[in-house]
Structures are given as C-alpha cells and as structure tokens.
Length: 632
Ligand SMILES: CCCCC/C=C\C/C=C\C/C=C\CCCCC(=O)SCCNC(=O)CCNC(=O)[C@H](O)C(C)(C)COP(=O)(O)OP(=O)(O)OC[C@H]1O[C@@H](n2cnc3c(N)ncnc32)[C@H](O)[C@@H]1OP(=O)(O)O
Ligand SMILES: Cc1cc2nc3c(=O)[nH]c(=O)nc-3n(C[C@H](O)[C@H](O)[C@H](O)COP(=O)(O)OP(=O)(O)OC[C@H]3O[C@@H](n4cnc5c(N)ncnc54)[C@H](O)[C@@H]3O)c2cc1C
Image (cartoon, rainbow, N blue to C red; front, side, top):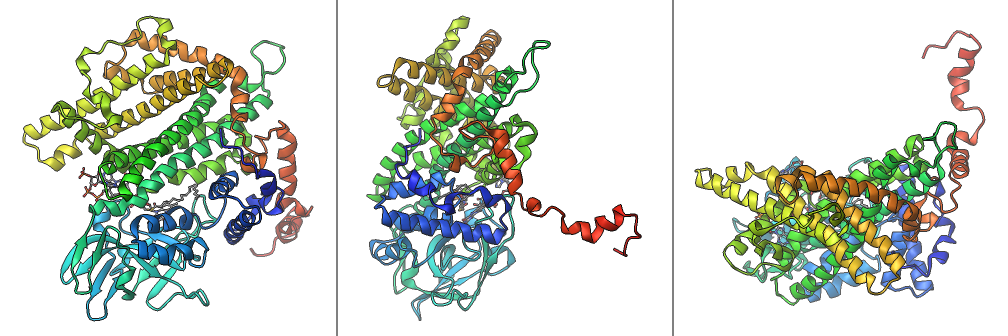
C-alpha cells in the first residue's frame, strides 16, 4: 500500500537506522539520536538526489523516529500559510536549510483548547515600530510546543495583538528564542523542557516565558492581517485563516494514525500466525492462535481500519489540496467544509487506532507487554494523537457544529456541501435495503445503512436543540444539554466517511486489479462495514437504520467474514510492504522467527551485559550468605 521506497536499501544499510538498540536509550540519547537521524537523511537526500517525497517516505520508513518533527510538520507549513511573500522569501530558505530551527508555540499552561483565552500578548509600540511580547502570569507561559525545550532557535508564537488599549485577537509572530552563535536564550526569554512523557520522548516539548521581548513589526506573520507603521490593523482575510496550520496537521494525523495501526495489525497478525496454543480437539495439534474466532475478532478490526484509513487519507488529501489551492488564491469558500471534515476525521482516526492498538497488544499475550514486541511502544506514541491539534471531544464538536449548519441549509432547501449531500434526502422515505440475510454481503447496502444512521443522528440532535431553545433555554445551556449527542452525530458522520471512502476506493480498484485481489478487498471492506454496525448497534437500532432482524443477520455475516478473511490475513499485512527495520518488532518479523528474535532482544538487554549485577555486591551477597545486613 505504501509507495515502495526505492531507496529503502540505502536507508537501512546505515547502522544509524538499524534501531534494535533504541529500547535501552536514555531521554538524552533518544533526543540526540533523533536529530542525528534527520541530519543523515538530509545528507542521503543530497547524496542520492532524493525528492521531497523520497525524504518524507524515508521518515515514514523510520516510523517518525526522527528529530525536528514540529519544525517539519508545523513551523515550515506555518510560514508557507501565514507569511507574506516577502516574509517567506526571508524565512523559508533559512528554515528549509535548518539554519533556523522552529517550533509552533500556541498552547499555554492554562489554555490549549480555547484559543480566544490565550494570555500571551504582543503589544505594538509605535515609538520603536516593534511588538513587545509578554507572558503576564504563570498560566500564560507556552507549554507543550515540540522542539521548544532544547532545540528551537525560533518560534511562531501565537499571541493576542494589542494596539493602544484594543485587543485584535490571536495573531502569529516570529520570535527568535536563542542566539544563533551559542544557542543561549536571548534576553527576556526563559525556556526549557517540560519533562518526560509517556512516549515520544525523543521530542523536547518545552515551556517558554517571554518577559517583554521586543521584535520588529515585520515579524508579525502578515498574510491574513497586518499592522501599519502608524498602528492601524488591517485584516485581509477571515481571522480563522490563521488556524490554517492546524488544519494541515489534522490531515497529517489521519496518515500518522494509518501508519501506526498498520504496524499494530501487522505485528498482531504475523505473530498470531506463528503462535500456537491449545487445541479445540482433545489431543489434536496445537492451533495457530490466528485460527481462533475470538483472536480474529480481536485483530481483524485493526486490519480493516488500516485499509479504511489509507483510503480515507487519500480521499481527504485530494479534498484538502483543492481547498488549499483556493484558500491560497484568497477564496475561503471551502474553509468551513475542510475544517469541519478534518476536525471530525482527526478525532475519529485517532480514537479508532488507539483503541485497536491496545487490542493488538492484548492479542500478543504476555509477549505483547515486552518492549521488544513494539506494539505497546507504538500505542504510547500514538496516544497523544487524541489530544494534539485539538482534544478529540472538542474536535467532534467542531465537526458537529458544521453538520448542524449543513442540515439547517438542507431543511431550508438550500445547497449543501458535497460530503453532507445525504442530508438533502428525505429521511422518512428510508427502507432498510437489507431484507434478507444475503443482502448483508452487499457493501453498498451497508453504506445506505450508515448514511441513514448519520442522517438520523444529526437530524435528531438538531431537533432536540431546537426544542430546547423553543422551551426557553438559552443558546449555551441548550448546547451543553446536547453535547453528548452532538459528539455521537459527528462520530456517525465520520464513520460514514470512512465506509464511503472504503467502498468507493475498492470499486475504483476493481476496474484495474485482478478479480482475486478485488474479491479480497471487497471482503475486507464488507467486514469493516459489518463490524462498525455491530459495535455501534445500539445507535443503528435507535436511528431505525436497521431493525433487530437485520442486526441478527449482520452479526452472523460478520462472523462468517472473519473466516473468509483468515486465509488472506497475512498477505494483507505483507501488502503494507513495511521493512522489518520500520516495524522494529521481534514478534512481527517477516521471517516469522518470533521466538528467536525475542531471545536475541533479551540478550541485548543492558541488564544482561554482566553476569552478576552490581546489586549482588551491594545487597544480595550478604543476604544470601546469611551475613548481617549493613544499615540501609
Ligand atoms: C513529521 C513527523 C510526525 C510524526 C508524528 C508521529 C506521532 C505523533 C506523536 C506526537 C505528536 C507530534 C506532533 C503533533 C503536533 C501537535 C501540535 C499542536 O497540538 S499545536 C496546538 C493545536 N491546538 C489546537 O488544535 C487548539 C484547538 N482549538 C481550536 O482549534 C479552537 O479554539 C476551536 C476549538 C476550534 C474554537 O475556535 P475559536 O476559539 O475561534 O471559537 P469560535 O469563535 O467559537 O469559532 C468557531 C468558528 O471558527 C471556525 N473554525 C474553527 N477552527 C477553524 C479552522 N481551523 N479553520 C476554519 N474555521 C475554523 C468554526 O468552524 C466556527 O465557525 P462558525 O461556526 O462559522 O462560527
Ligand atoms: C505530545 C503533545 C505535543 C504537543 N505539541 C504542541 C505543539 O507543538 N504546539 C502547541 O502549541 N501545542 C502542543 N500541544 C498541546 C495540545 O495542542 C493541547 O494539549 C490540545 O490542544 C488540548 O488542549 P488542552 O491540553 O488545553 O486540553 P483541555 O482543553 O484542557 O482539555 C481537558 C478536557 O476538557 C475538555 N474540554 C475542553 N474544552 C471543552 C469544550 N469547549 N467542550 C467540551 N469539553 C471541553 C476536553 O475534552 C478534555 O477532556 C501538544 C500536546 C501534546 C500532548
């Protein structure tokens, strides 16, 4: 599925990228190693004339275990999206050649979600033609930005723009943090690392206090709004245009989610094909655990999710490119649509994979708890995706807000955006397309069921909101009264998007691939659809998209499809074309020698580098020999 990286051999021939040893690294070593890697990939890019796409694939091949993550994924994109042409000409070449190293400093100790409440100020001083940046109290210090702690020389700081006594809202400013001579923080800047995290510890997420730091007026990123020398504020686009970098990263999160769940399902499926335990027949040979229906039930959702997210990322990338091209031409017509879609899908993708990765880990039994299995480590790296770039609940609510607007338009007989075109249908004329058991094998029928459930969830919460308002509740308490249903409606829409992308992509592929391959993909798509209905069956029933009889048929078909997928499960993860050095798991190796690789990993364990541990001489020797213990 991943575009085969023609330079994979070059990459993995390098000892630096043979990463069996990472498990024993300290934080400082992880941090240094990550920087070393990015710089070496840059050298390889030059040595072998790699394109930017080759470079990006190299980073994916290394499972994102690289440095400068925020520099690459946010700082440079923020300059591209928020700066004027002159500013781009000044900063992009420096950033792209790593002469300046950047971060995106938005979140504060006291606020991450509510951007309106950010406390950092940038006050215009017309006497010196400068902005004065200040974090006025403890809660205002920037807290979390990646690479801020020890690496960044520059930050794009999001701050409230103050001119005179008036607040013009959140705007982006380029602030130099550290000397380009000796890397020391500049006057007025207090900066450091926020401490160890549950995962992603090669990244130096940091804190930043700004004590009246002065920057020239030209350092306000002024593509969307600017301040003139005489202190006038001129806005040239909607104030939400400054949120553009977040929209891009939400798209990237779908890809990161896809990459992590591919690793998880690959490890779980390959290992389950190797592992034998018990038998269903007394005295029979031990079974591959992958042959147990329960094991398939645990793992195949992650396999299906890998493909669903792959197709959804591809579809959303196309939508994003169209929207971005328009936005860069000054046309913001698609801004609301792309924000509504990506905030929901970011949340849905990260929720899905964090849940399924834990199922993959459990499916590896005890060995899944070993670092060498890598599946647990992958989960820890993936967990922040539910929080970064907007907490998932908040993102679902943004998506729901968009859906409410769309349904209001549909009900008023106006045009709606293409991704919500189903809201124009007559919800009452629905008849479930599944009228007998065998109808459940038609993915297009399932798609109709998903559509009805999403439509019904959105219509129902819209009606309830309307009712609450008409009963005298004010806007905010009516909204708060319906938050859970709003999130459910957004999830229903996102699940429909994934199913729709899966069905449409498989239909498109059917026209070009062999019938054998097409039938395997159709089967997986069908399973994805069936499983999604079964896991949210309460909501599908409540929306009357299905009845109890249909649920019974769908459940039976879901179980049948586990058996149908089983013969192709290993091939379906092999098709990810992931190198052993990418996956790094002792359990999920291509050669299937899980036990041998586990043992090799144990032998490399630093504890095993001496036969007798220092603790023996300190404590165990006297204890074992019955000597009185020294005072401890
Ligand atoms: C390269 C390798 C990478 C490898 C990675 C691998 C593993 C990952 C490991 C670790 C993660 C690594 C990196 C992750 C990077 C993460 C970086 C960050 O987290 S940066 C900080 C991100 N912060 C947020 O996302 C904040 C979330 N909050 C918001 O977005 C907003 O405050 C809000 C909740 C959306 C509310 O907005 P606002 O305060 O403006 O509220 P309202 O006035 O009510 O406006 C709502 C209005 O605005 C529209 N809108 C909101 N956002 C946008 C947008 N982005 N674009 C367009 N429009 C937007 C919204 O639709 C409403 O419109 P309307 O209904 O018409 O009023
Ligand atoms: C690994 C990592 C990397 C990060 N990197 C960066 C970075 O590079 N740059 C940067 O600027 N930031 C970064 N962040 C910060 C990140 O963007 C924020 O943590 C995120 O946006 C969530 O905000 P918060 O922490 O303030 O959560 P909060 O908003 O405090 O959320 C706490 C709880 O309150 C709920 N809640 C909050 N508001 C609402 C609401 N309106 N309605 C209903 N429920 C609500 C949430 O659902 C959640 O359950 C990073 C964070 C992490 C973990």
